[in-house]
Image (cartoon, rainbow, N blue to C red; front, side, top):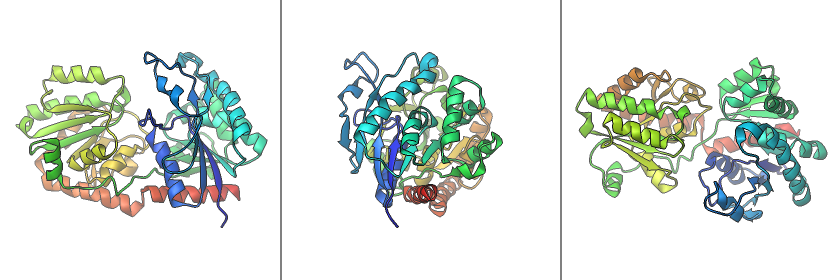
Length: 404
């Protein structure tokens, strides 16, 4: 079988200065590059920025226009005008994206066999002209619920979403619920395909907890972990309120530590809430953590809690499962596809602090059950092949199907 040349376009793609921008998008490309014969090339457009520290994302200006990724494929960072404020101008930014990025691609990149956009907008919409000129297939990813909501709305942005979805040969969803939603909105069944994201089970895995405790200088305590953006949609305030009730109902204040990994606009509000609840002595805001340090925190954790109000199919759940953490998470989006209630964790209703308290206390009181659920999580990851190698093979199959 001949190799396939794929050009991936992803405005949300990590770089050396901002490695936490949608790291999963790079993992998807790296997996296909590593585990298949697909020849990948990536265009990761960046807004024009002013190189002064007072401006957000000012280091974008330091990125080379073209480089080789750390895993060996061509990586481009062409610039385009990004209009602010986003709430007002986002629906027209896609046209500027299309103008500038299309010109760059046509002048600098050889025609591939297939285009893969990581988002319907800006990426998918922004390369429709390229797709038409080259007359090659287009694959577009759907990650959350916003795309399908706006696909249904009659806004300017929604119309551009619809145009992208109509033009695409395949819409790759990370969860089955998105496929169902797409069908309800009238997207042809043959266009929709579910390909769950993976996890590296050689990095996210159980380790020697005692050694990690010594490295981190943490006493013998049960570790409750959260990893994610600190915004309102992640519902971390409900976790903090639940922890306050957990420690008030028992002597857990001596035996539990909560680790919050991530950053975002709600961080200060969450810190202030932690102070008001009187649990600052057991809650640690660790900030952004990546690499080996993140792997260790997952390995040390006994329980992973994700109280989100909206989700696609969160990769942090896969990471926690692979690390043998029991899970308590909200029954929304693709989470029920990952967490079997009572098997590798518990599902709770969004904003329901009482349910969070009940499930957390149950698992803290039943350590053997918590360990069982943690082990079941890793078993499920392996059995379902929710690994990056599994993702790569599924993506390769879709590429081949679309080209034929």
